[in-house]
Image (cartoon, rainbow, N blue to C red):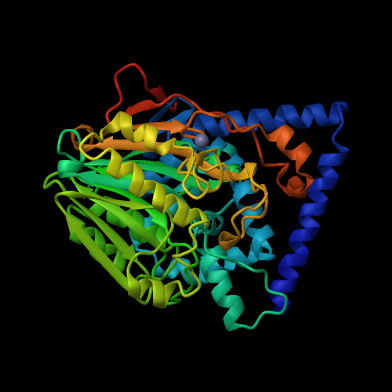
Length: 506
Ligand SMILES: [Zn+2]
């Protein structure tokens, strides 16, 4: 560690300690009351001033079914400013949870992530996305006076690729002593079907997001983005992040996109471009499956390596694009189904990018869910539609033990219920994680820029934080961030919201 880094870390600790001290000393004294009044006045003045900022023109948001829908439009700087301003409260809430988890798993302090953002990620970003990220920091600051700057926001955007892909690569390169055992995550269950597999012959695409409940409960934004350049986007997403990141989205040229991560992937290319930018760029600019693949391959850094499930409603064609770092493969069909549950399929990707993954262990979460997808999709061939897809995302059948019980092997994951955890992703026993929300759309809905989404476990069960933490003190470090994750109803969203439902930001 350099002296400078040491100093920055030491200084951060002093600042945090001073903050805690200040918080601990807060009392109801007159002086404090006066200060609080002043803070409120300043905050109100700041909010009022910012609400007349021309960059906010056209933005709006509303809440429905547990989701926060936000409409953003304009040039990159305006889209960012609107994002930061409208979602200031959600970003302020999500940032400590995400950054806390990043520091906890990697055993690295926040200045490390800021340095990675500034020195490695930022120079690889296209100006368009630099402006958008800068806009997020400015909008956030304008609304709440937040001290987070653009490098904090870039680091937040990298939360799926830096801690679990870059850091293990770096630890290995630098032979870091006592390096934590970091593994790439396994996120999500998803499928895309077309032709004789679906009820109406069009495309049906469905996805549930697997993550920690701590993050998942905050993964509740529906972004409707109308950029100055590229296609209109409707996607789910995370506060402060420019890409869906779990991922699920559609664009106005007919692309339908989902993914599941590749378990036990290893590798990183420091010369590549951040995955969070490429995935956003692909949804914004690709009008075909091939264009989507081309954008993802351009500057592939290996971060957040995924099996992309794609559909093009214009042609009825679907694809699976397995994007490793050393190898990749694209399969396409106009009559078939592709599904994912965190396993690689191509022999070259398996051999070169996931050397540790055991495809034959049917007790493991990815393989048990693969078996279940095969069963369910074959049983329902020709019957698949949006409402059936919702049921499939909620499925609780354990294909290994051959019984119904929500756990780590079921398409709707509930890993907090099992004492084995998921070791290949470093999820310890009773890890509070699993399927945290679900989304579905089909060709007809995508034509109208519509999707349905359910917050919480797709099956509708609630997760309650207090009893969980009482039973599992080993997760006490999550207590400041872990909240109840209550399921909402399946809720319809359309990129042109109905009149009267908008909540103006000013
Ligand atoms: Zn469930």
